[in-house]
Amino acid sequence: MTRIFDLVVIGSGAAGSAVARRCRAAGWTVAVVDKHPLGGTCALRGCDPKKVLVGAAAALDAAQALDGKGISPNGLAINWPDLMRFKRTFTDPVPQQRKDSLHHAGIETFQDVARFIGPTQLSVGDAALEATRAIAVAAGAKPAPLDLEGREHLLTSDDFLELPSLPSTIAFVGGGYIAFEFAHIAARAGARVTIIHRGERPLEQFDADLVEHLVDRTRTAGIDLRLRAEVCAITAVGRGYRVQFDGAGGGDIDADCVVHAAGRVPDLDDLQLDVGQVERSRDGVRVNRFLQSVSNPNVYAAGDCAATGGPRLTPVAGYEGRVIGANILEGTNTAIDYAAIPSVVFTIPPLARVGLGEGEARKAGLRFTTRYEDTSTWYSSRRVAERASAFKLLIEEDSHRLLGAHLLGPHADETINVFSLAIRLGVTADRLKQMLWAYPTHASDITSMV
Ligand SMILES: Cc1cc2nc3c(=O)[nH]c(=O)nc-3n(C[C@H](O)[C@H](O)[C@H](O)COP(=O)(O)OP(=O)(O)OC[C@H]3O[C@@H](n4cnc5c(N)ncnc54)[C@H](O)[C@@H]3O)c2cc1C
Image: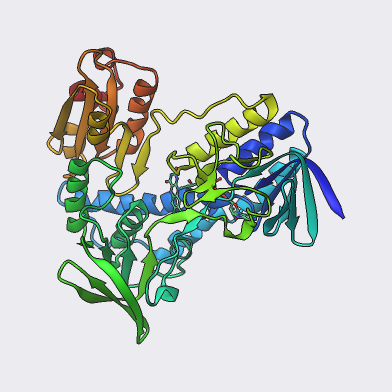
């Protein structure tokens, strides 16, 4: 029997939930389908559980940094099983809470793989669903398939966040934000950690000078960072693994576990998009600037699975979901705007950016001055004995508008939001300098930065 809904949403993460709720609030009948327990990546396998682990690692690091400055951290350690239990108090309730909340809103849920069986129809397990007004594809992302001998030995980021005990040695394949964040957690928790990255520099989306400071800090935290090193094979050796790599002198390292941190791709392969006449590229469902499929006007896509060119972050997924909702309900006229979206690497300390990088600003032909300074001797860093601390601001020459802000150091993850607000609202550096901030806070450093 075919079940009929106004809207069928594939995915219960930030993007899917946003569009489902918006259309349901307008009185539409809505179904949400997810092949995993409801909740999506961020709440179950991404941002939220990760930040719980970062919190413990940062607490330990903060105590160690103040060794001899009023704290005796001897014997202080992370108890991994306890920490995982604490983490599960956040993740375990999510699927039921999400289900209850969607049902409470009048949205029906299905837990199975969705596949297109026509331009407006999907199969979900034994059921067939027909969407009379729209289908929203919000299927998220998965680890990129790697053409690598021994890839079956790799753990995913999902697996890392579920490790019942902490392995003594861990190797991360790839040098993006997931590798850095997890490596910083694992090193503070007592593991010997290696990151193997094939590029010249890791964290390529972030400011190169600030990344250099973070690389130093990463190494002094005991993390072995191999650059220009490409993993070519992983073999099982005894109870662990040998990771062979080319470049950077070549060689191999042994580890108890090897984690895939070499990028994520849209999770679209199950969907039979061709049957639904939905075109895709390597970057995801091909959409116009209103997030509508370029080949099937009944279909919209948002979040990590859509080829929008936007950053793959939770707030962006939610925003795109809301834009789809507006376009479906009110006619396709709300275009997406990616200005001033902050992005953070939750290392210890965190690295953050918003707006343009120096290269991007130059490419756009903008005339700007760069303010770049190592702030490790500033009060807010010295007070907590943090040596990796710096900022870079790009300020447009004539208008004095802020074009970009890049921060590394304590509270960079919070302070970047102030710059995001300033850039989005077109606040000039002069106006920002006139602000009175609560003191002593990291935001109060903004006066000196601008
Ligand atoms: C380890 C990690 C850490 C991260 N940390 C951060 C962070 O700190 N801050 C941040 O902003 N972002 C972070 N992200 C990114 C963020 O999690 C994603 O950008 C966001 O969750 C994307 O939301 P979404 O709604 O597009 O997809 P998802 O939340 O991934 O939801 C997609 C859902 O679709 C379902 N699905 C897929 N295919 C099908 C199918 N055929 N049938 C049925 N269901 C299907 C999946 O099961 C999934 O639940 C992190 C990601 C990871 C992996």
